Image (cartoon, rainbow, N blue to C red; front, side):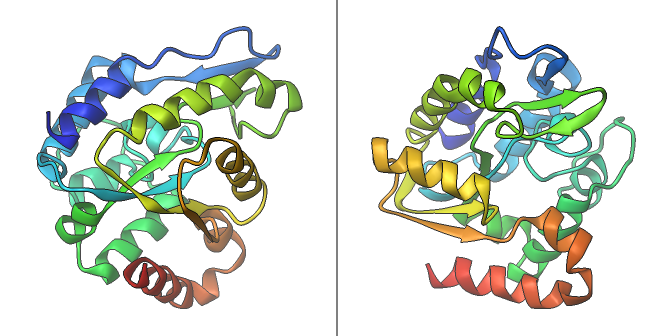
Length: 223
């Protein structure tokens, strides 16, 4: 099986965590046939081989990015214009995707970047409450309910020909602390390197966008 085959099999079999806190809803875009077809096109285009990649792990998908396209940090606009995959999804840009694809272009483009890295999330499914994005750690009960799901998901993804020497973690706060704690228990990776989250950069440090893009590319190329 190629890396693409493994990734698609993983996403197709994802079962949502159950008994979530009241009002919390799961986003599982992989249950949508059109979205899953887009995922197939994307992963067969960039991951139809067996070479190892390093994981870059976000928090969990957001409703305008990975929660819509099924592809982490990729909104419908970037999927069509920068990945060359036409789609009929609502063409909304998403802040994190704006940063990520600026960084990917700086790195050397999609073909080169995706030949070396795989985006994922600590929790591969996203959550909303009252129509607003929610992180797995925003609610203590949700964090507890998703723990086993998260551990199992990471363990499965490590079988995707993943380079376990280094993992990059998006988010230098709670996401990093959570992944670091899990790693101390399960030894997923030898080292975890935190990166400032793209949404934080775009919302609060946008004037220094190119500094952060350079910092990302330097860290990714140095490790």
